[in-house]
Amino acid sequence: MRNRSVPCESILPHLVYRDVGAAIKWLTEVFGFKEHYRYGDPSQPQGAQMQVGNAYVMLGVAQPGKTSPSEAGFRTQYLTIFVDDVAAHYERTKAAGAKIIEELNETMYGERQYVAQDPEGHPWLFSQHVKDVAPADWGAIMAKQ
Image (cartoon, rainbow, N blue to C red; front, side, top):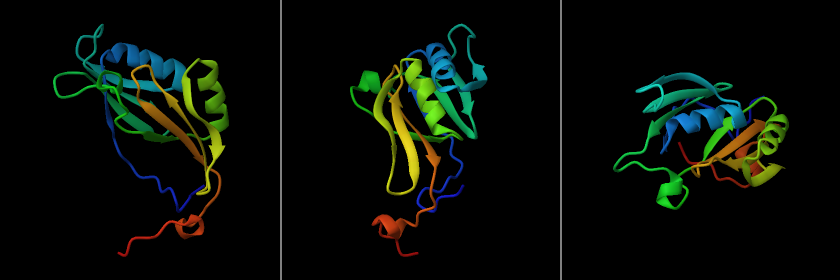
């Protein structure tokens, strides 16, 4: 399904973790990511590329000037990852013990979504298009092109 209020495009975000190896394990076990590759010492990787569905993210190790939300003391961003069955993903994530910071809900702009937080404080918004809603139908004001 396509939703005009939430168009999907390709982007490759980079997230910082104190322990990339632990992040790989947690993202795989809890969110269902698959490791595409890692680099650096295999026992203490400096980075990795992870994939779930059509989404890819890069993981990198914390260093001066780059830190995780848990080290910074605040959230630095949200990532939205689109999945085919968000309700099943939510149940899997909750059963794995992840911290849910927004329960599964349906938005006025046509998405069913929830937000979970990983151990280093990154919030992950998992979403599924459930309706095609024009932005004006829920009150958004389109920019003049």
